[in-house]
Length: 374
Image (cartoon, rainbow, N blue to C red; front, side, top):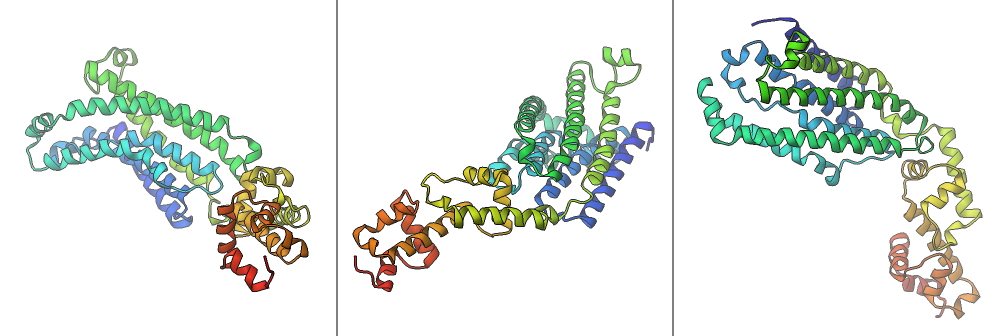
């Protein structure tokens, strides 16, 4: 096995990333989606170094099963980076089907590589290439490179606008501290992706590892330089990621007590004293403006401290308002839905559904229980 400077860098990057992943899993709440996405990103970057390592050390000739091993995972990097940044900037991020859709295209290409590896697994090294070629491997590989370039452009643009449109007023102090890390992460990966893509183009034209005009100008292989850069990036990102999120835990999902109590009091005042829920168009944005904060913070307080949603909170107050008005003499001159409209409801269906959900009985059944003739 040939251990030149590149192999040492690749191996060092792999080991460093493995150690940091282990520390993250051991010392932090890895169940959090933010940490899982960080682990996935680091894992993809680390595994992407393996083919270069086994190819440059000659292991591929000693162990033929390494040939076509499906670890060319660069196409996953920017979708994962986008999802990771989204999870950092959102107060209650959920990894659902629409989010998972970002990984479909990379997953399809990876599945094809997996099939190629399995099909050629028991062939001799000299025969593997012909078998893969008969299955359209090199054509699909070209499509993958094109997809990689298009995804690079798309996600770089999307992440740029995501960061640009994220106002500092909508972020917590902890989230604001992550912005420098996010920008460094994006720059490092963007440069790495551009270098990798340039290496691919030069390799297609002049052959890999050496022989292009760029190699002659540099005096060494441009591809080797790119692989070394990737190894250094994996080491740097794993270290920066761990240090930047050393305090990342489930506490991220809970605001300080005084912060929470302040907004709980403001919310209660808006609902109980000002009775803003009586306005038919009352919205989360309107409540946030009254409390002089962002919708993100209001949603966080409602979800994690009052254990309810904005709609359920408003409907609860409106239903209680209807119940109170039904007990007054004036109720006899109004229809049931007219009273509901005075309480802020705009839809009869919404009113009946909310009333049943909160009181466990229909409005008509409630009327009978308080014995108010209508």
